[in-house]
Length: 481
Image 1: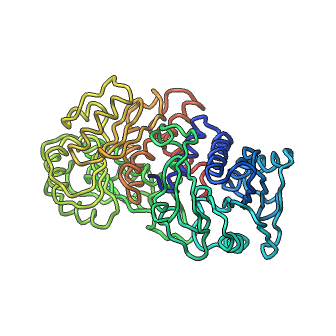
Image 2 (image 1 turned 90 degrees about the vertical axis):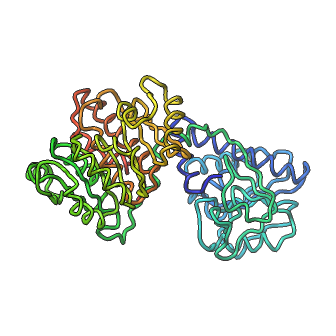
Image 3 (image 1 turned 180 degrees about the vertical axis):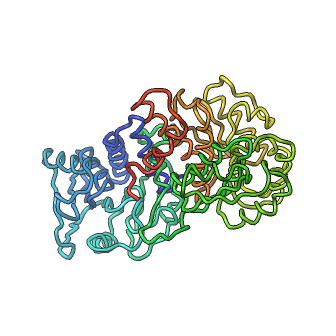
């Protein structure tokens, strides 16, 4: 089962893996033609009612495969307004093949004719809400006819995620959907066929550009809408909490505050004017500072706990005590990871260890293992701990024991110190609005992609701070937000 939004991401990831969308449309159209043949014998008249997007494009392809049927393609709108290049190419192929096409310029004059079977290819899974003309009028005409109806991916007007319709919707007898079932199709009184169109399993498993569809920026957003992050770190180190805080800002958090010892507060603040520093007394975190940290954490969507804290016994005791009674969302990084196995917490944790830190947590030794072995072992450990894990390595693996993702971005130049702090900060910003596995997956993908772009442009020798200005493009590049 896959949601429509996730399906759109998988389509894009498949293209990034080298499976062209044109090839997927060819396979989809062939599957639609097969579904028609199951219902209508050779020679039957088939009316394909098509929109101007890729759903219509699937039907354009199907029409070419139905050469043993009497086919008419009805396009709702002018050919020059077909939305995608691949749909337009397949419309042009119809005309070259001399298949009968009719352009519906006025839905009030739409004449379905008297077909033996109707194919609904007006709108796909990505469209929700009530139908508007010309689709609304066409749906009414289809429903008034007594011929069986095959819908492409989802009946037009039906929300593929819920099975509900906000108004008029096509009453389909058969639905041919692609790659995997959609949640809303179970609610329909229709025969549903799931067609394999050649999308590789790795398009769902490997994090890719399609996953950036999880991010959005509504035009009416206000300050704070995209999360407030608290970084708790510093003491022995000053750069780590500053890097994490800046990364959270670059990854979209609206406000980032850093709780750190007063002894390093001035240095942390000097890295970035936009960071809001909330120091506590002393030169390292201890249990005496927890009232201050808890008060701050209560006003934030996510806490990033660990960058630069060090492993002093009193510091680790403070981390343990904080997690034990906290119920919010926390990215746990660096030395703070050591206490996680010993803590019974109701907090939602995303832990970000490298292989050595994973061993110190009582997890498996995944050094040298390929991504398949790493994923299997880490998933089993995540299931035991009850926490999501982002285990850093040549291929980052992200899992909560149920959902599993692999990010293959990144390069050997990122072994330099501080890149993990950038990753933790980015994950903190994303965890403010996304589930832990999604937040960790996108953070790993963007952090690695930023590093890849730097090395491609300048070669090795990157600094962790070089990643910061690259993060926004890695997260939002090519996405319509």
